[in-house]
Image (cartoon, rainbow, N blue to C red; front, side, top):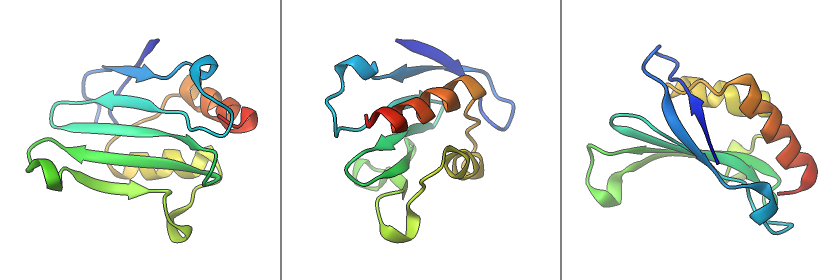
Length: 112
């Protein structure tokens, strides 16, 4: 399953990969992937942590240094609402469209 997402900077839309919820086990996490020229964004709902998460990878860096952001994995960075994730994503140049936001709420509600 793919969808289109655009960057907050008005860049060209990129394909987004999503893990179909039917393939996720209860208690797992959803995962959406957006790839831009030099960045890769991975975000979704992490049921065990009870938080949305956002990972940002910079492809211009060495492999072990590519992950520049990992929000939602610690108590101080937990994001319980989609709006919190949307704000965080915009900070790093990603606009999450309304349709994807609705999917994220559903994934949270379904625990996937």
